[in-house]
Image 1 (cartoon, rainbow, N blue to C red):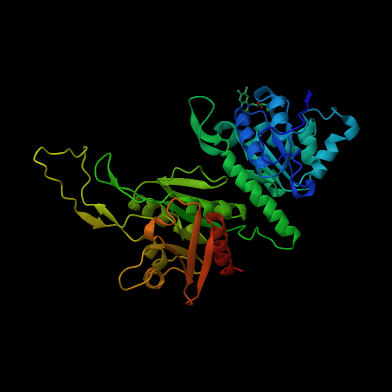
Image 2: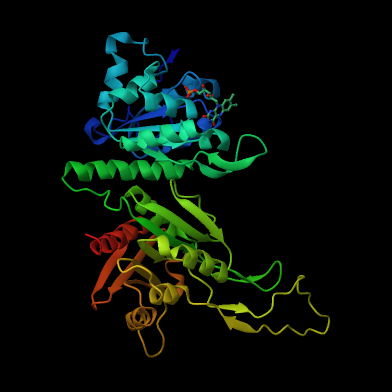
Amino acid sequence: MSATGDQTPGATHGPGDPDVPAKARPNVVLGVGGGIAAYKVCDLLRRLTESGHSVRVVPTAAALEFVGAATWAALSGQPVTADPFDNVQEVPHVRIGKAAELVVVAPATANLIAKAAHGLADDLLTNTLLTARCPILFAAAMHTEMWEHPATQANVATLRSRGITVLDPAVGRLTGADTGRGRLPEPSEIFAISQLMLADEAARAAGQSVADLTGKHVLISAGGTREHLDPVRYLGNSSSGKQGYALARIAAARGAKVTLVAANSELPDPAGVQVVPVTSTRDLYDEITGRAGDADAIVMAAAPADFRPVDVAEHKIKKTSDGSVPAVSLVQNPDILQTISHDRRRADQVIVGFAAETGDAEHDVLELGRAKLERKGCDLLVVNDVSGGKVFGSDNNEAVILDREGNALPVPSGSKDALAGVIWNLVATHWH
Ligand SMILES: Cc1cc2nc3c(=O)[nH]c(=O)nc-3n(C[C@H](O)[C@H](O)[C@H](O)COP(=O)(O)O)c2cc1C
């Protein structure tokens, strides 16, 4: 049951790539379980090899029922087998795990989770899991019933108690016509978490701990709310939700329990994050104020509509033959940031707002930001200059973070993940 591929066709960097020194390539073991989502893991493998990792794929026998060894071997450029008795002279059941800097198991089946929790070692992957001393990431995928079964939940708790990161399955369409919690988190999300875990390990090796949000519950809002005029039209804005999703992803990677209230975002659920979808500002208000009492930190990265139509037409508003246009009367929405800041239920709660400003004739963006921080009563305000359509939808962000002591921290242009990291660093200083 073995197959060997020598090179990585199409991969920018692969194990056979002479341009990338061997030491520069983190050694990743990609364990694949026998789930229907095994085919999606080809995309994860591609991302890992193309970003310069040396990836050894170790499937289970059941995984090879779904995707053949030839595919894994060709994409990774490394030998592939499920059997510890292949190439015994190389002692693969010990060597592969010991050489790993990160083990990612996806899809992590109920069976694999159970075997790992009980220390079984009856194939190459389970042997590898026992010999690896590096961070281990399980991305679970299975039917909702299997996931919710007390046996699986106890096994997941055992793995987590040993420091293994287990990503909950995402909610969505399952194998058949059914939907529920059970889907493999998106490969892009598993990849993002794997990169954060490698960076975390590097930081740990340098004596810095980045799992500094462990034990904290953070509540984040993202996206742009919509206020319907009729069943098909709405007033909205162009917020993509990327900054709020980045905040959720980074907080989860730093150990927090994360709830993300997402308004109309099309982004995949960040792995390991509870996502609550909403449409309008009032929906967002209800979800945030209802959950605020449990949160150690609240970051309001969503762009809520300030106004909504007084009336929502029951049917689509029709054009008239005389060319007249309907008048739209608006009413103000509740101010969520101000409400949660003024009704603060916990003294140690940290509240962060965002201000997307364009400046006006009399005030620049920062003056408007300072006035907003004062008016809203939050602890930190992340001020974005959005004049000319900057920031919305982009993968990069540039901001100035204001605090209540009058400090202004400029964060130069960089990824939204990087800005999220700076925001969590500042939030964490309130607790440590
Ligand atoms: C079509 C099909 C899809 C399956 N999908 C899953 C799944 O997503 N998650 C899971 O835990 N088991 C799933 N199973 C069951 C596993 O394949 C089975 O438990 C197997 O023993 C897992 O082996 P492994 O954990 O060694 O890979 C599926 C089985 C079939 C036939």
